[in-house]
Image (cartoon, rainbow, N blue to C red):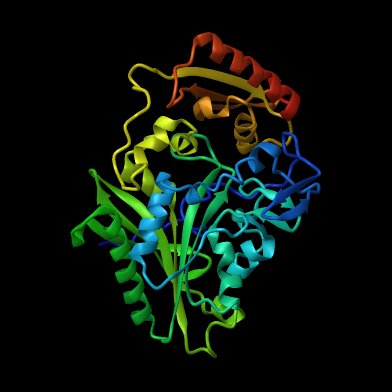
Length: 397
């Protein structure tokens, strides 16, 4: 098919969509230190990780027996035999591991504290499992899968959550023939996708040219699924420099391929799970549906017909430094965060005389697990209005 070029400089899916901006103080409680992965990490003025984010670190849904993400991970691991599997690497990584080791340049938007959660100047919560490529190659691993929780500042809707899960794959081959590496990559990943989605015909899969800083050439694999093209993974031939630095190119005689796949992005269509918040459900009626470890259609806990969304809105004049992600993070820090289905910017206004700028957001309340009363939602909105003033220094309109 025709070559489709994607925007430059993305991490593996999903895309980071915003421009780099300057750091500003995060909007909620930041602790003096966090204990993550057996390591005590002391925070500093660069930290934009509040307590509520770190609370999710220990959940490790990809290791919870018969959780949909764990079922999917196991299915993927068995579809790629011969790969060593890592799934317990700490999500706290250095900026060197996360960016420099992958040739992501200074000033790249992925390094912006508007996109990435910084624990301190030198440590981040990994926004992708690629952060572990260098260390594993250096330790002598040549064919491996890494699964784990990843963290990104992002918008709020039914398919985006600030922590999600990824699987990374790397294979180093004893050849320098790019065509041979590409053929092995594409055959392996088409096999993986057929193992998940059933026997797709050739015309139901397509390779789209893409760009990632750490692979060249790069592709995304899309499949025709339920009447539309679904982007399932990003991949490519690894930059030789990455192998060389890790001592994995055997003196220039080996090349490698890599891929990254978002587990929720695949699990939602496969299990027919309509809302990403459900993966975090502690409701027994959620987990019990998957107790036999098979991929099966999720039966909704509530009928969305019976539970209409409750649409609220909030508008305010902005202080000097303001990012939409600061507001989204503030919503996520509220006790009622998981009752919010979507937050959407709908008005961005600059006053012609005073040049003051205001923004207005729709906040949609609906739970995939229970009904919400109007009084309850009004109480939540009152708390949010108070928080946005005290935490972000805005003036309500």
